[in-house]
Image 1 (cartoon, rainbow, N blue to C red):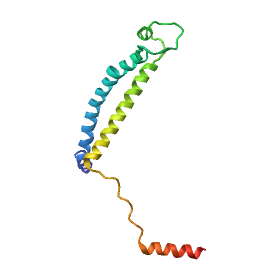
Image 2 (cartoon, rainbow, N blue to C red; image 1 turned 60 degrees about the vertical axis):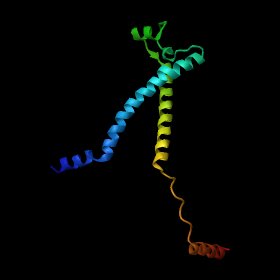
Image 3 (cartoon, rainbow, N blue to C red; image 1 turned 30 degrees about the vertical axis):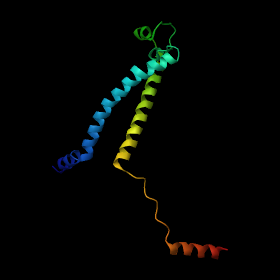
Image 4 (cartoon, helix red, strand yellow; image 1 turned 45 degrees about the horizontal axis):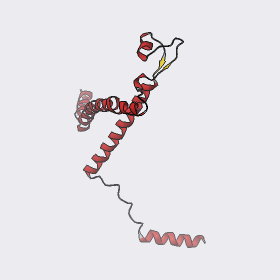
Length: 137
């Protein structure tokens, strides 16, 4: 019965609920950022780079050529989807930047100051160091 009580105490800690809320909000926020990247940023970047659709960028690793990525996938051809990799990398960078800015804002709102400077060295310690240095000479 003791293990059940320990688990109950662990599960009901405030930090456990905070983590659960964070995971749920993070999942929803990830979808928003994913949509921002795939539906807003990458199409604009594609137009800026000569109307490139990043989702369609791939390298066919098979012997047969295919007109589109969908055709290659339907034929189960081996393909290297580097366009999707670019999308996912931009997605990660945007998400990481937003999380960084949120943490920075939260720390500012909490009023967390940088760690205090170490206390000044006491006078007697400074005097002893000076005597030590004189004796070394």
